[in-house]
Length: 527
Ligand code: GDP
Image (cartoon, rainbow, N blue to C red; front, top):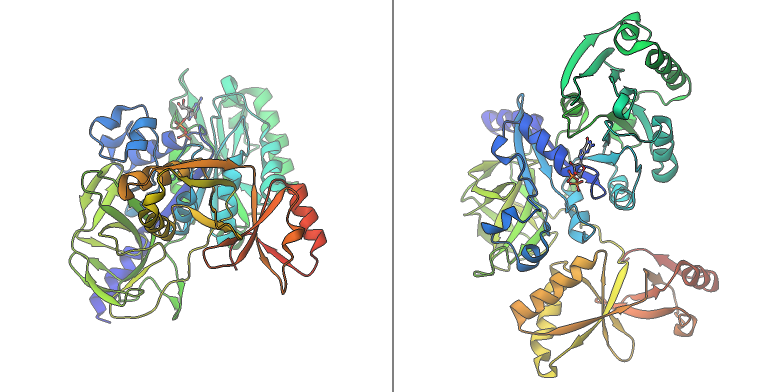
């Protein structure tokens, strides 16, 4: 490798941090993202990151559903610079209506920031997204938000992380008071106190102290909070987990930060600690073994395909995570699955809703490629090579509906639509045995709407979806399957590769089936 390119790659990779924020709606993700972008000087974006209050729709050319509902259907990517770092935030839809795309986006992140509302603790969506990150073993940083409001006791929150999520924690700072009485936080690693001042909690004074028992804290916070802090931190020192960088890196211990995003309190400290502790883009597994980001040859994989950003042109955008080498506009790469050489002529980078043409990009970055229908989720692009990256995980559907085609004459288009949309990962498709009825499985309701919308818009097929009462899907691996054992509150179907899948209405039905079929394996996703 040429010395200069090697140096350049090393330098650029070291600068990069690519992460996703995982949270439940309303925890403050948009607010935190805005504050982070402000540190990067991307001021023009403040207040418009999500723009969900209809303001954006005047200029946006995003798909119709998004316009009608004012939600972010798709994950966008934001990049900003901070003190020599290049930071990529992968946005995940903030609404209930998240989809498999949300999960898949997490595969493109090197770490995650888990945002928790101090009053609400760990919520449903956070839990789901956490589990995906957990499986990947990426580091997870926790920001406990809204400290300016009355919330749960910090110890209870740590306990909840352990009980509900099964992750141990190390508080990097600790609140002094809370809600109206919040004075500030004690920073355990820097042994300093960060103080709120003024009614709006906006001014921050930082005071170096000798330890949490420094009398200066008493002067600043008063006897009551000083005593409380002593008690809390003594308890943490004795009973809390120790700081362990290796455990943080393997995602088994989460550094916890307390703050208030809206007041910009604790955000900068969080950002600085995060940049120090979060991993740079690392090795990714491929059919050729591990690929280093600093490898000279450009490579990456498609983790998401976004359709109909512009309904007039029906173009699609494939989101590519760069894993190695340097990307240059116009470069020729191999589309490995298709066995074709293609030119990456009009790549785009995302900064909230503004899409700019990108000339160069490095590992950790995400670029959008114009897709005339040649990409599928999981596709690998390589410069002068032939390997493919490990397959993306699939996720167990939780919501099901039967498809009814309104006009039987459209069968051909319907079939084409099903094949194409399944391939893109819009929905998972199952067929009943014998009747071959089509059942769709998704993780979020929105996927149904996207499916229905695109079937009509792109294939001219009007469909009706009839919700089914199932909640779980399990792929069954067994020598011989007895369909009669899957009748009560369940149904046996086949997936697109003819694997047997049992759909269950409730946990009890699933348990019963598992007990009745001791020789079978019940898998959450396709084998
Ligand atoms: P998202 O749904 O996770 O993106 O949440 P938003 O960022 O839209 O925030 C949800 C609500 O919580 C908004 O009304 C915010 O103004 C509010 N919020 C965000 N951060 C804080 C905070 O630190 N303190 C308080 N009191 N409210 C906050």
